[in-house]
Image (cartoon, rainbow, N blue to C red; front, top):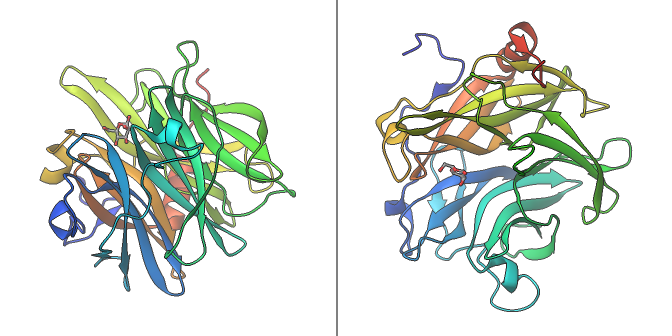
Length: 314
Ligand code: BMA
C-alpha cells in the first residue's frame, strides 16, 4: 500500500451500507453528492430483490455521517414516456448545481438499452424528471456545473463496437437537445484504464482548468478492476484536455472494495470541493457500500500536468 496516498481514505469507511437504509435493499453504491444550504445530499443507487436498481437519498451535516431518508427518491416511472425506458431500473446518479438548480443525470435501463435521464430538484424534497437526453447506449454522463460560452456542456460515454467506451463532449442551449459531439479521450492500451473509461464526478472548476475524476477499467483473468483517474480540461474550451494523469489516484484496496457484489471496484459519481483546497471524493466500493476520502485539489492537478499521458493514444 502507498505510504502517502493522493486520496486519503476516511477512517470510518464505509460511510453508508444497506444496514443504514430503512427499506429493503441489497447494496448502497455509486452515489452523486452535492452541497445545498450547508448540508450534503447523497443520491445513492441500491439493488432490489429483482436485481434492478433504484436511487435513494441520504443527508449529512459534515459529509461523512449520512442519514438515509425513509423512502427512495428516484424510482422507475410507473407511467408516461419514461416508463418504457426505465423499466429495468435507474442507476448511477450525478448531481450538478447549475444556477441554483440541482440537475441529476442517471442511467435509465430498459429492454431498449441504457439511456441517460435528466431530472431536477431545488430542495432535495421533490424531484421532476425532465427528459431522456440520449438514445441508447450511453452511461456515465456528467454536466459541467455552469454554462461555458453560453452553452451547457456535458461529458458522456456512448458505446459502440467500433469505438468502445471512450469519453465524448457535447453541448446544448437548453439541456435537452445536445450536439456538436466530439470524442476527446480514449483508453490507453495496456494500461490501468485500457478497457473502458467513463466520466465519474461532476467536473470541478479550478484556476488551472476543469478537474474531472473518471473511472478506468482493466480486464484480468479474475474479472475487471475499476480504478479512478484524473484529467484536466481547459476552462474556456473543455474539449481540450490539458493533461491526463498516467497513474490512477485510487484503486480497490480496503476489504469492502476488493470483495462485494462485484469485486475490485471503486466507482465515483460525485466529489465535493471544499473552501480549504480539498475535495471529498465519494465512491461506491465493490458495488456494495459507499466510501469517502479527501485529496488536495492541487495534488490532483499536479498528477494531470506533471505525470501526463496523451488523452488520445498515439
Ligand atoms: C459498470 C456499471 C457501474 C458498476 C461497474 C462495476 O459497468 O454498471 O454501475 O459500478 O460496472 O460493476
